[in-house]
Image: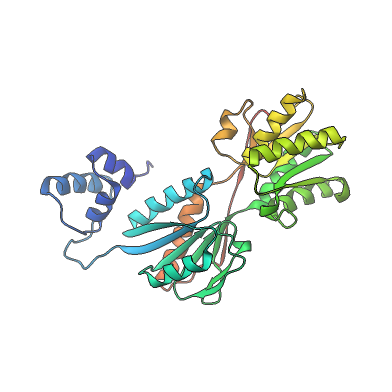
Length: 329
């Protein structure tokens, strides 16, 4: 069965904004008759149920707090969240904040915000029990913001992702892994690293023989990984494969290996994490663990809407990941 078109696709066909499509679908606002009729005909043809414009419908205000808009995964999640909320007659406001976290929380609470989404927000120093529903997307282990004493989170199943990465390398005969991570990602307790290490240990590896390199968060993922691989190889560290906890780290490692005339995957095998565009268009297409931004977004919105409507919601939701085959393993 073919899925119906999104508000964004209908907006493009009608030469209007997605917000206009959402408002007409929810019976909100006034529009030129020809615009309204055109949009409504497309909506009905796609099977959308239209609300009576005489109903006292209004857009519900949802806030999304994010610390990094340069992250491709984050941008994809935000785009999907916007589409999901449009279907539900909600208005999304995006707040970019990393340093002044307490001010942001107070600002959100003083506004007419009815629900809050936190996207990978590292709010270790801020402890709040909010009076409005909130859901954490990725990175919830670093945050102490709750709703009615409970923390609701939606994350990728990173422990399984680490296991899948290890299994790919073990099947290829690898025995001496190097893990590239960032101190900001708390690699000692990172589910990705835990899943990976446990799978190698189960296969007979000694924990002390698994190299874990934590890069400084001030450096870019690409540069820190490239520098790390060059440094460790020059130092004489022995590894036959690399698990990079992001695709940009994997690409940095790939460039460093090429510069040292080490062949991938013949000499060193390499696997990344995320499944972003660079994994497809690097010098060699990367084997990587692919996250699922649309499922992360949809599940986060569903959880938040359930809380806003006073319904029960799961406190923890894990979204499956999968191996994306490339040429580096």
